[in-house]
Length: 138
Image (cartoon, rainbow, N blue to C red; front, side, top):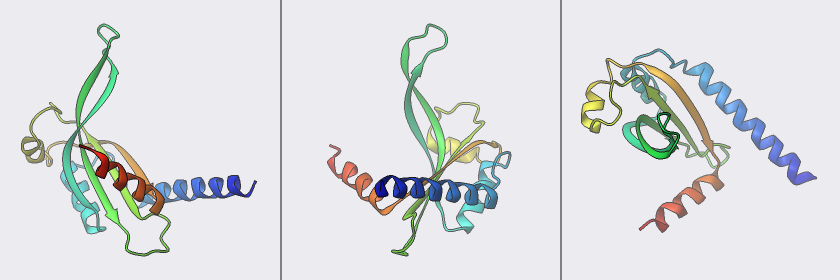
């Protein structure tokens, strides 16, 4: 039972971290450039990149791979007592074409606005698992 109590406490801490991030950084509607600047002032390292995900094509209901673009931001904590060893923010924007090269997307950052924001808190254990997965990739 104690293990489940710890899991519940950890989930609550992650929710609290997300609430604090959202209250400190109300990013929806800001230009992507302004959002990146704001997060940069708070110690986040940000970059625009593509991500591929699988979903259903609405035209024929077949599974296909979609390419999208996001602003990825990460802030590492050097405090060994910090529950969140890494804080991640992924921001989506209203780019006219999310498949354009990264350099073109970066040039549009002052003209597009944040439409969605996802915050993730990685514990030290999460960070170790992600690093191990990266090392196993060919």
